[in-house]
Image (cartoon, rainbow, N blue to C red; front, top):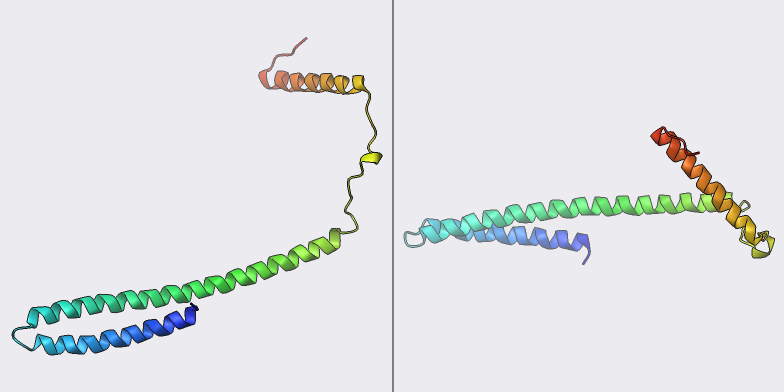
Length: 130
């Protein structure tokens, strides 16, 4: 259901509550129904307050949804501009253009990496591995 129709129905509900409050006022002036009239008025006042609060939350929700729509539209425009600007710079992966390594070369790289890591550990602890 749309937010506008919920607000309209809530307004109709408030009008019904006001009509019921008139009946509650009439009951207060009768001797036998005084307590029932007070209880009815109290419950209707609570119902009117909750309905007004519901209408306010619907208004807030509508503003938030409009803001989100605007933000999403703006983000999609920024993304589209970014894609247009970065399109010539994009590179695709081509497996035939990557040079192959020899078997021993990858082992030497691992050794170099372990030397670098041990050098970092030595700098942090203040001791050198020799």
